[in-house]
Image 1: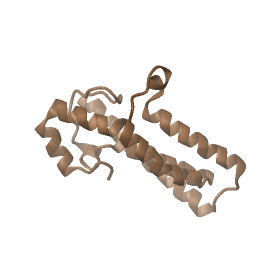
Image 2 (image 1 turned 90 degrees about the vertical axis):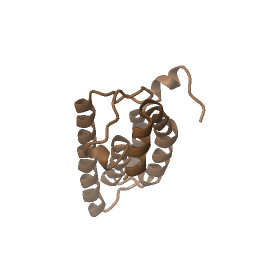
Image 3 (image 1 turned 90 degrees about the horizontal axis):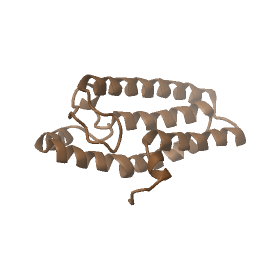
Length: 152
């Protein structure tokens, strides 16, 4: 995928893609009636799960004193805590948050946008991050990626 330039480069961060997807979901809620109550309850649970995953991942970044910013080279290979279960817990939390808020808001489009967001995150961020991990940490990164799944 081609690298963006100018203003698009400044906006090329996972939270921006997540906000764009959530904006489309919110727009649907203004135009189409919502889902049933059980879906809203499930949505609440998923939102709380996403927040918990995000907090656990940020904690590991703080403990390791490594960058959390995409497109930058990490100072440490984080393999502990939530990173022992998923190589990309923050991106996982982004997708769970999109699905959870979609259910909470009664917007079916968010369920359709979730795989699109997964694809964007993989193409725009994960592949480059994995290449930087290999370049920086070599065999340690290879072993980590072999034993830890990309998502869950």
